[in-house]
Length: 259
Image 1 (cartoon, rainbow, N blue to C red):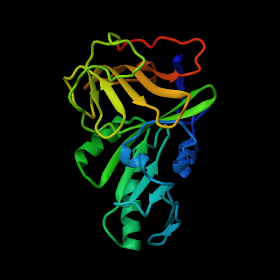
Image 2 (cartoon, rainbow, N blue to C red; image 1 turned 90 degrees about the vertical axis):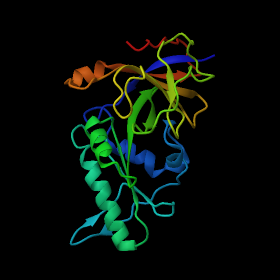
Image 3 (cartoon, one colour; image 1 turned 90 degrees about the horizontal axis):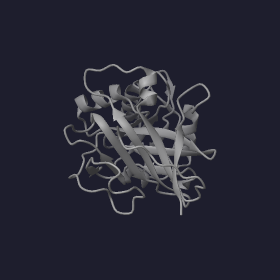
């Protein structure tokens, strides 16, 4: 039968997730050992990355993930830290430039993978560069199992419609229309008044889990910040909740509709 269960988000640092957790998943990306939800199709199709030690002008560096054989080549910078996520932009662009300087060839796509971060969203939007991509990551835990949720907050949304078929939620669960996210198995329910990457107000986000026989869907439901507001860490933590559809759920719960 299955049912929804509330999952806990692993915060960066402290007793929560360390950046090494995210790094470990990407080191064995093609092995699909960790259940992953959402994720842009092009990223999902990549093999295991390399981590070559490279030398610049008097120093050395090691990219977090480098796909030298993909077209285009891709270099990724992973961040899951409480304070230093914005640094990922400089690191990714630096690695792409130096790797191209060393090995030649066409420009390399820089991919920044971080926690949800509005600072980075604004910066990427201002750059509006096809050579720089931003993907956001949430690490969740349920039944002592780590799960990863990836989505591109800058991806265009398709025309709003009803909830996608096969989703284990009642059709009247939320009056908000659902929009598909271009290029990934993700849908967002929102009021339609704002556009990515800054949707505002009540919202829900739903993604298929790509590689698990037990866990099928990930859901976030809650409230997104509006322009001109300031949120504390507690405000962010209480803004919404994470849910996972578990085939083996023995005491299923009911996710709250966006408030």
